[in-house]
Length: 426
Ligand SMILES: Cc1cc2nc3c(=O)[nH]c(=O)nc-3n(C[C@H](O)[C@H](O)[C@H](O)COP(=O)(O)OP(=O)(O)OC[C@H]3O[C@@H](n4cnc5c(N)ncnc54)[C@H](O)[C@@H]3O)c2cc1C
Image (cartoon, rainbow, N blue to C red; front, side, top):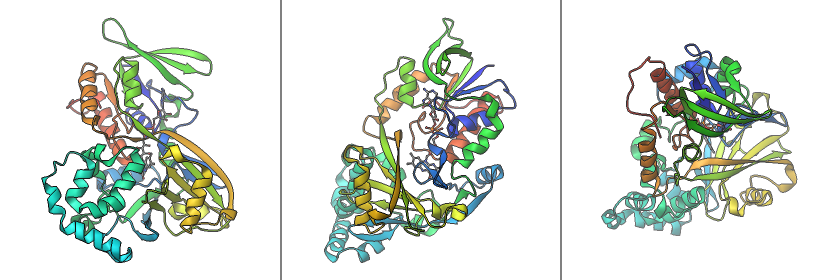
């Protein structure tokens, strides 16, 4: 059986890793000149930089053990904050702390609207905004949830799917606060001892290196007349190359890949601009990451890599990594000005700047999301030998641990180690 894996991010590399023994001839085709995709790292001025803050957290002990067996990682205590209305508060938000720290008039508004949120209980919970109004009232919605989610996705909160809200709400419920071990409210996380978060992908790559073809971009797919073989056309540095596969694992953005097979999907991604700033000072904060919740800030989140696993980082300098999805209003000068306004830095300390574009940073869960993913499922049900794994391919906010686990399941099914179950398509 000839297997073609499209993309060498963590999804493609993990699939190859789990299939390499049974299928030593499998091929991984990667459009760029490097592996790791969104979970890669690069060296800059002696710092290992990730594409925005990345950390490993899972409450699945067996999975964690498997990942820790791959490479040495440190257990790190989480330190993160939110800058809101000129004050710093803990992340995830503790509603009581928020009320205590904010201006009394604002706090009163939050409490008042919270107490009278019952009137929103009549609203159907069919979008993100009504979900928040139901749960917290309009005070917290106006102050925090609405501006942040609208900045992140670039659409009104009332057009964001409630489904996303249920998974991602950044105010911990009481149960979460006690348990402190959920994806949202974890206290500790794991991070590679060396090489940044990208060390996970580098480690997977080590075991599958001969199978990976870099600079090999999928540009067309067709199926042979009998409906058997998938004929894939790749653009490479030497020119076009054709390969035929019995089984395809796509980790490519779902609308792009579906488009190659003739299905037009209206699923969109929110791009991001990541700005790296080299600062002439040993540290800017003691946080691993911090958020800017207010609407007037275009920055969503900032990471300071030295606070993740900075033992070998240069002593006199630090690097901040700022994520912006409101790219319409973006400029590096504005990013620096916002950090200065929050008293994180002085612009004279900025020694160098680097910008990276992420065209597929966040799948946008808008109203059409359910219907469009259903269309994708129906379409790919006719292609049982095409599998979709990963954040872009499954159009879901997946983390590395979840993708690794999914790759293992899919590889198991392909190799006949597990009985086939419901299709993993989309
Ligand atoms: C801002 C941000 C923060 C995150 N934080 C965390 C975190 O804290 N912890 C965590 O675990 N995860 C985090 N994630 C998620 C994690 O980065 C992703 O889920 C994961 O890297 C996605 O891997 P993937 O292989 O599915 O997709 P990708 O990494 O996008 O890989 C897809 C690959 O396919 C290649 N490709 C694209 N088109 C073609 C083509 N036509 N032909 C061939 N190859 C192609 C791309 O170059 C890429 O290498 C974060 C993501 C973002 C954006």
